Length: 231
Image 1 (tube, one colour):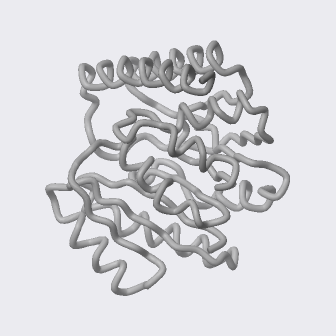
Image 2 (cartoon, rainbow, N blue to C red):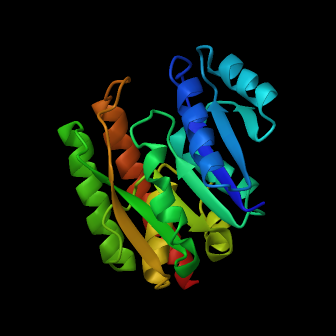
């Protein structure tokens, strides 16, 4: 398989159908051989029914249903499940970042190991912004510089460059993309970062305590991961 797309989803039944269909249309326009893997992380609304209907209508869309383990752990599972594809692309299900920009990454992929859409024009809660800046600083301090938007959910990766990383990370990881970005910097892989417009989140709320707790967990996981690379 040339490309596997990984999309985690939780309680977005009203939105997910249009988002997935938009991505499939964009990928078809590029003539890519792909599978589109939607990971339902224990949604409590009608998300499961929506993605099952999408899968039945188009065999390239694969619906996965699992108990709720969190956004990061779901992304990591998607990466591990699909390492057989030459390329992995991860994007979120909220429609913040349009598939219209994907061709800019895809067309340059042969010269790079990881291509990241850096979020531009993002309007987020101050707590999230502070944590993003802190994550960037910690990743740089532990692994070196090279990527600005270390946690961007719009990334195209050469599977062979990161397979070992995927299996070194803990299954309950809070922010796998930060660790993956950091690994790319540490290993001095070929990196391309392109600004991509990011719309304001259409639904959902910011749970400050949960975000802060997750950020602290992520810090310790990143430290343990960095130590494991020294062993």
